[in-house]
Length: 348
Image (tube, rainbow, N blue to C red):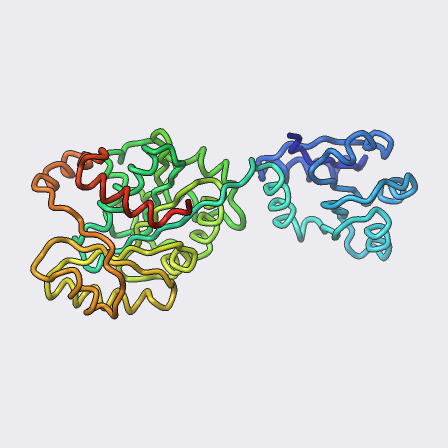
C-alpha cells in the first residue's frame, strides 16, 4: 500500500521545508513539479500537499475531488490563499512555519503502518512493597510470550527501574529522559524502534538516578503512540498519583490495585483507592495472602471487586535480586494468575 504523501510544488525553498518536516515524521514524499506530473498519483496517494505556487495551475486541470488535500503556503497574509484552497479542494491551509507541528502530525498519520487498537492496563500498589511492579512485569512477560506486542511502561521515577526487575538495566535503548523533550505526536514506529525490546516485549523505564517526574504532555504523547503501536500496554504507576499517572488512568481499560492483606495494607490501599477513583472507572483488587480474607478486603474498599490473589513464592526475593522473574509457564501459579487477569482485561 502506498503511504507516500504527494507534494505538488516547484518552489525549491518550500520543497526543502516539506522534505525536512516529512523526515521529522518518518515519512518519505513523492514530488510532482507540475500538475500534469501529479495526475497519475492523484487518487493513489494517501494525502496530497499542494504548494500555493502551483495551486492555480492545478485548479485549471480540474482534478477530481478527494479527501486529505492540504494547501501549504509560506505567505499566510496573501489574500488569495483561501481562494486557492477552495479551488483545489483542499481541506485546510497549512501556514509555514507557524503550523509546522500540525504538518508533522499529518505526515506521521499517513506514514505509520495500520494502527493497532491497543489496550492499556494500569497496575498500582496499595502500599510500598505490595508487589505491583512484579505483577506488572509478569503480565507483560506473559502477554508477550503469547505473541501480543506488549509495552511495559514504568511510570514511577522512584521505583528503582522496572528494567532492573527484568535483569535488563544495561539493555540499549531509549529511557524516559530521552522522550520527555519531544513535543506533539510521537510516531509509534519510531517509539518501538527506540525502546529496549526482547521479542514482543518493549520496556520504557528510567535512567539510573533519574527521579524527575514525567511531564503530563510527554506521558500523553507516549500513551497515544503506544496504543497505536502495541496490542497491550502495562503501566506500573506510582502510589502518589501525579499528572502523568492521571493521563494513564483516564485511558485505562482496567486498573489493578494490589493490596496487602493486613490492617495497614488495607488502610493504605483505601487511601490509594480514594486518589485514583476520580480518574478511572474500572478498578479491581488483587491481594497478597495475609490475615484478611478477600471478601473482607473488598468490603473494606467500598465493594471494589476482588479478582485474584497473588500466590506465595518463597524464593521470590532471591530470584529478583538475581534479576530473574519467577516462572510464568501455564502450569505455574503466577502464570495462571496472569493468564486469568489478561483474559478478563483484554477484548476477545
